[in-house]
Every structure is written in structure tokens, then in C-alpha cells.
Amino acid sequence: MSRVFNFSAGPSMLPEEVLKKAAIEMLDYEGSGQSVMEMSHRSKVYKPIIEKAESLVRELMNVPDNYIVLFLQGGASTQFAMIPMNLKKNGRAAYVNTGVWSKKAIAEAKKYLDVDVIASSEDKGFSYIPQVPSVSGDYDYVHITLNNTIMGTHWEYIPDTGDIPLVADISSCILSEPLDVSKFGLLYAGAQKNLAPAGVTLVIIREDLIPENPIPGTPTMLNYRIHAENGSMYNTPPCYTIYIMKLVLEWIKSKGGAPGMEKLNREKAALLYDYLDKSDYYHATAEPGSRSLMNIPFLTKERDPEKADAINKKFVQEAASAGLVNLAGHRLVGGMRASIYNAMPIEGVKALIAFMEKFAEENNK
Ligand SMILES: *Cc1c(COP(=O)(O)O)cnc(C)c1O
Image (cartoon, rainbow, N blue to C red; front, side, top):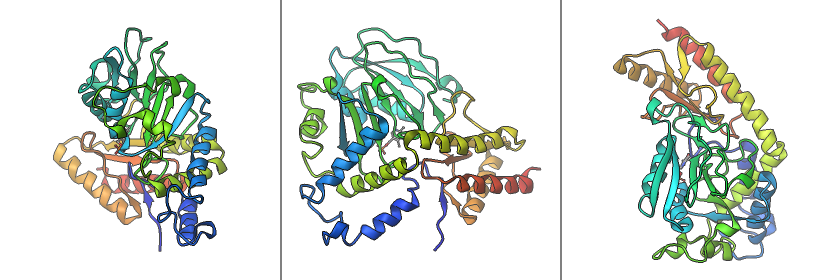
């Protein structure tokens, strides 16, 4: 069996060491005679798994003591509703629109409160991160998408929101580099990009932001307080996914934690961006100064839409034959996209560049 380099935007590659460890522990987890998939979430053998996952999140992200860590379900998309339902006070929130996921968050929030879009990069196809002046007003919170998975952009600075809680979707960049949690009121991430298989959403919320009561009619399952008071065990949590997250967090720790990940990720991204910037055949779509370390969309120089479509298809197909899979771009950006999350080894990026060179030689006419 040979494994491919998987450039999928999510679900995405997991570290091979993690998969091997999970395989070894599959039938008999630590002498329990059971798989983690089969055990009660309230059992003596399972409890240390979720506790270790939480303590590793706290350690690796340097989470201050006045923040609660929650393991929830419903993906990052459920947070788009849960945030306004729980944080609404005055009834108005500020959002920055940096692409598809921001737009979805905005559309959902509008069902529950008034939204001011205080900055946007839509004027240039979301190819950059806008400058946000210091925010003031009676906003209940300010929302940003820290890494834009589809557009391939990333905030290089944290906007100053004063006393207004800053909320960030960090689904596609969590633990890819150090992040100062204390600058945020709430952070959330669907796990399937950088942390685990799909099925768990990590929420890190400052304790004082959890309201006594969310807006009337809020389902029990969408109430942060319920989950906080029950240690993410109000109902059955996604036990196995949390176990894999624990293994991934242990792997991240063994590689030097968030600083170790950043070093590796900067090295990988620099290789690819340098190649793209020098190439006379390909170019990156995100502007320098706003570029993601995780998701790198790129186009060929083919301008004619039909021809571009054909060449993109050819690229994706031939790359797949060479063991480099899931490189098709998002339909909104076109071209190709290489997602190079924490688990993508540098060899994968080198193999991609070697393939791109060969493909350019054969097709750059
Ligand atoms: C993938 C993604 C989402 C959606 O996550 P789900 O867990 O599928 O709901 C939201 N925001 C960002 C930035 C993403 O990358």
C-alpha cells in the first residue's frame, strides 16, 4: 500500500503516526478489551481521553484559566448561529467579510441580530485582508474569519476591538502557529482541517461571555452554558473523534507545539509561494501580506475560460496519477488549490512543486 499526498481542504490529511497509533489501539484500548469507538463516554477508561484532549488544547494554545474549552457537534457552521444566539445583548454585531465562510456566518447571524459589515475585501475577489480601524460602538461582538480556506487569505494582524469581544473562526488555521487567545472573546474551529476527523467542533470561550440565558427559544443543544456546566458531556460527545484529536495534539506537542508547527508551515508555504511568484506559468491568487500558510490557491496563465478549464482538469488528473490528490480549486476561485495543513509533510510540497515544473514544461506554450 502506498499513501498519497492529500491536498484536500477538509477533511484532510492526518499525521501518519496518529493513524498508526489508532490502528494499534483499535481493538484493545489500553487493556480495556474494547475499541474507543465502543466504550461509554462516561466510563472510567474514556474520561481520561477527553480530559487529556482538553488539557492539551489548554497547554498548546496557552489558554488562560478564565476560558472554557468545549467539544461540540454540528461543525463550524452551527457556530454561525450559536454565537449570535448566545452573545446577543444589544442586538447588533460587526462582521468583516473576507469570503465564503464570512458570508455564511453573516447570513446566519442576520437571523438573530442586526449585522454591520464593517470591512470587506469583496471589491477584489477576496484576494486580501482589509485594514480594520479600531472598532467602537455598542456591538455585542466583532466577528472575523482568521484563515479563509477558499480564498487562501489569512489575517496577519489581530484587529483592535477594545472592550468589544472579538470572535474568530479558526477552522482552517487552528494550531498552525501561535495565537494569543487572550485577545479573543471566542474562538471556534471545525476539527476536520487541522485537528481530527470530522465530527467535533472546538470552542474556546471567555467564561464571562457565557450568558445566564441565550435568546428565547434557543435549543438546549445550542446553549453554551449547558455544555460548559456538563463538561461537554450533556449528551454523547463524538468520542472517537475526540480521541483522534488527542492523538493529533500529542503529535503536535512532540513536534514543538504551535511554534514548531509554525516553523514547518512557514517553510512549506515559502517553498510553494516562492515557486509560484517566480513562475511564468502559474501565479498565486492571494496578495502578499494576506497569504494563508494553509490553503494556497493558484492559477495557470491560461486566460480563456474554456481552455483554462481544460488545463485545470488535466493538471488535477495528472497530479492524481502522480499520487498528489485533491488539488482542484474551489469553483469560486478556479484553478487549483493546495491545502497544506499541519499534517502535510514537506516532502509532499516538494513533490507538488516537482510535478508543477514538469507540467508547466509540457503545457506552457
Ligand atoms: C470548513 C470551514 C467551515 C465549515 O466547517 P463545518 O465544520 O463543515 O461546518 C467554516 N469556516 C471555515 C473557515 C472553514 O474552513
